[in-house]
Length: 91
Image (cartoon, rainbow, N blue to C red; front, side, top):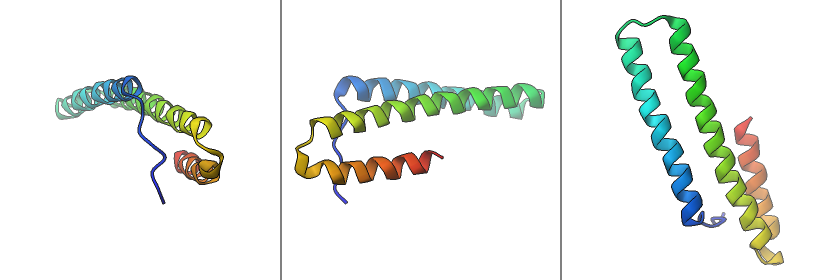
């Protein structure tokens, strides 16, 4: 299966920033666990990271949809199949 394409640099930077933020957040959660923090606090932070990663996923999906719209008609079915597969992986 061919690659859909690459994100524009602005989108790539935004997704990267979100992932770096999530990475730092995860490192903080690990410290919380190591320090024996309350389970409720740890869970709340894990859910916050999950939300950050979902937002990054949506940003990538938006890029895929833009690729679909910009693609020649001959590639649209292939791209749509990839988008559908990605959506199934999200659930």
